[in-house]
Image 1 (cartoon, rainbow, N blue to C red):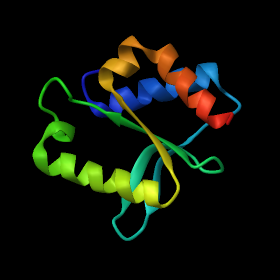
Image 2 (image 1 turned 90 degrees about the vertical axis):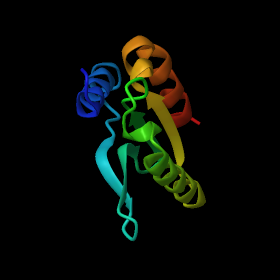
Image 3 (image 1 turned 180 degrees about the vertical axis):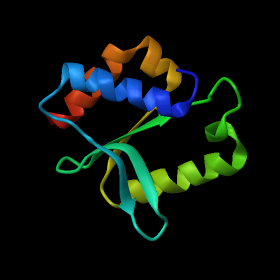
Image 4 (image 1 turned 60 degrees about the horizontal axis):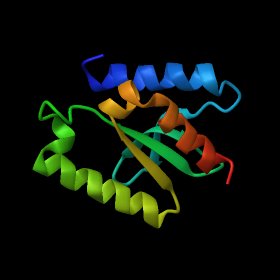
Length: 109
């Protein structure tokens, strides 16, 4: 589970096991101009999840250029009415129940 894709796969497996009746779209492109995508999105509720891998090994999300792009993406999503949850690899691996609980709570609001 060392790369971002496997973190996303792990999240998807957890979600499918715990919430099989409300599956998200994967790699949903929410902005065609900037070609921004969410790792996971629930379209009706406008809730998205971003898995930020590489936080402890100087991955792309913690480098200046990508961090700026991530901020731009987050701000554009907010302007479009999205609620975006950002989770680290540690969240996915060490706190999956809390992570899932937060998303479910938002989906039920």
